[in-house]
Length: 318
Image (cartoon, rainbow, N blue to C red):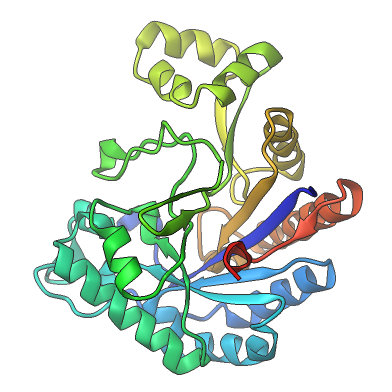
């Protein structure tokens, strides 16, 4: 069985991450740069999943991206849903003015019916614009909760990409995924395909142990002595993403997971990062260009040198 790679783009509005989220953040101006990147990825052999939030899919700019790739929706492009609750109607009991409480940026923290209504609104909007009803879901901030699976099933979703392996967001009011690795599994009628992360270290034995024992890294972070020791051994969590990570680091991450038997990978990024000064990961034109190059070069390396195959999450079902 070949190694498989899904490229997942969090297609969303632009906002200053350092200033928090607001309901007034609705702008999408990076569509041309996004099209350029997707074209390069397709030419490199990738298949691309556009996980779109409400401002993106409801904007003329986002719709132009969808229109460009509509004809590839059955082969190399998948239109998926990405719920940012602070900019997704309805806005019941969510905001005070245009500011949003941090806990409510995680969709799974919302009341059950409100989470469902928001997801239903997004689903219908994606279907009306793209002509395709999405079957793959990615929660904003990876924020799935106790009621999310039931809402997804009610709306016809089959796949969830919200788990972020080895990560714990509880300090921000979010979910704890520290006991999850990258393995695909099925539960509550939903197939879960985690966003790929890995633990790297200068000590290979420790690295392998941390990747096999998924809670180990979080336990080290919560214990002062272990935290100091792990820092000395350069024990660090990496995400398979060009945002904040170099091409070499993404390759090292891939090798570390292959070593423990992982065969399915998600390469992810946020769509505003393709344009200079839109996110902290691409503060200028040089950084945005390098981010795009690293994304393309990783795809070329994974498929060309590692013998991997491109995939769409929906292929887990269809």
